[in-house]
Image (cartoon, rainbow, N blue to C red; front, side):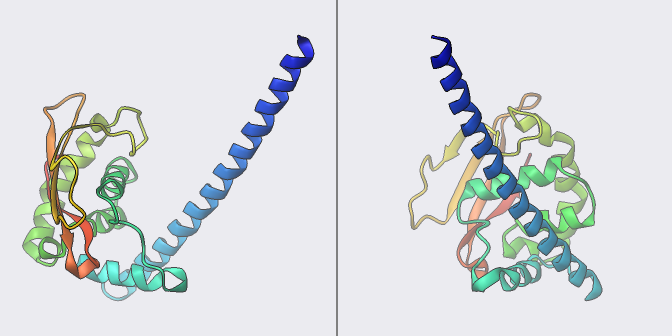
Length: 192
């Protein structure tokens, strides 16, 4: 019996080591992506501080290796994950620039819309971001109360998700595909 337990423990230890190696590889990949983003944001500051989301996205897409496009926006979940990650992450201009890049180009191209997001939406989501998470610090741990439509059609171009909150009533976020961003999902309205 003891040798069987020992074998199970060794097997579990080997599995944990493989998982740790996978996590290390992911951390390295994330670090590289953050470095690329920091370089990109630095070049934006040198160019006079571009405030238009389409400029940031165009530069990001141009900076991805082998001509690959950045996957952000392929799914609504990827946009929601990033939005909540920015909400609970470090504050600052770079974080806000990433946040505004999640908005539909129709909304992110006007100074009035950018000002509105910076003055109202950004402070609100920064204040309440953690309340939408079921596991503190994990932006992928949000829970939805409702989705409209429940399952978007492949050709569908609009959706509205209602996010559960520990402290507030469910809050809606509207998404729409953005032709200027390759048909990817972007935020059109955020009440988090």
